Image (cartoon, rainbow, N blue to C red; front, side):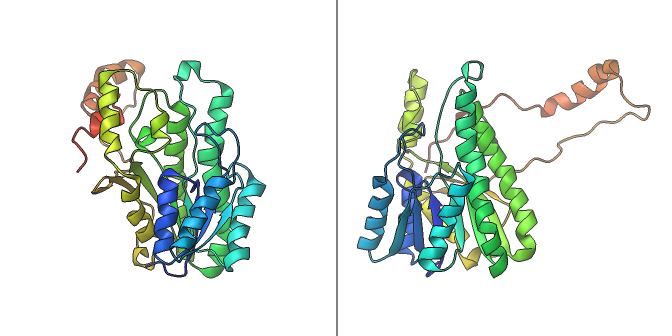
Amino acid sequence: MVKDKVVIVTGAGGGIGRDFALAFGRAGAKVVVNDIGASVSGEGKDAGPAQKVVDEIKAAGGMAVANTDSVADWDAANRIVKTAIDSFGRIDCVVNNAGILRDRFFFNMSIEEWKAVIDVHLNGSFYVARAAAPYFKSENAGSYIHMTSTSGLIGNLGQANYAAAKLGIAALSKSIAMDMAKFKVRSNCIAPFAWSRMIGSIPVETEEQKARVEKLKRMETAKIAPLAVFLASDAAADVSGQIFGVRANEIMIFSQNRPLRTVQRSEGWTPQTIAEHAMPALKAHFYKLDRSQDVFTWDPV
């Protein structure tokens, strides 16, 4: 379905990104494996992980090149895209997967922890997507696949930076889908449920948390890759602006924000009438402070 397409996968040195790169390689795509080889928190640099994935793709008969530029820098993001053009002559798909974690409760989160996560996830997704846009426009074709998270779509504790970035990515994807539609360029999000190096870094203290981690361990990262390959293919020509989730063998589509209920008064509102009329009428539709595990209560299948 993606034979001879040129695909960039960021953060492809391990976890979900690695599975994406390998799946694209097996499906006949030419893959740019981007990874700076940093720790889960974004520290350090190592060319080894990206090159190892390239070697795996080549050993299976595929075509791939490594790139170790950071998505969090505009000039470096352009070099990632240039690697695809220089190596394979074109670009057909960008998978914005690179990410780091700096988990901490909001009231303790440092400015550096906030900015580091926003820079990689949100700014990084914009930078690489924007760098590829002129090529997609010139070809009147292309596909973006961005990684969002239920941490942002629903909520989670101790991840204000990550949640804000991931919800921002969903909005970014929708804007790209709208702005690029006339050029036949698509943009979609995937919210993955899977055990990965990033998930493995989350502190586990209570029995409830331990049970949730054991459940996550049963959700393989490789299960997410087929949806990414499909979204990059011509078979997905009419799929854009959507948010999908993959949870083991389940594929789901997420709702997007729309009004639930409205109230009105011909004479307008005062703080008093809001308290007496508007809030009681709207209260039945209030959302609880749910976390992802409060919504997805059933075992993965």
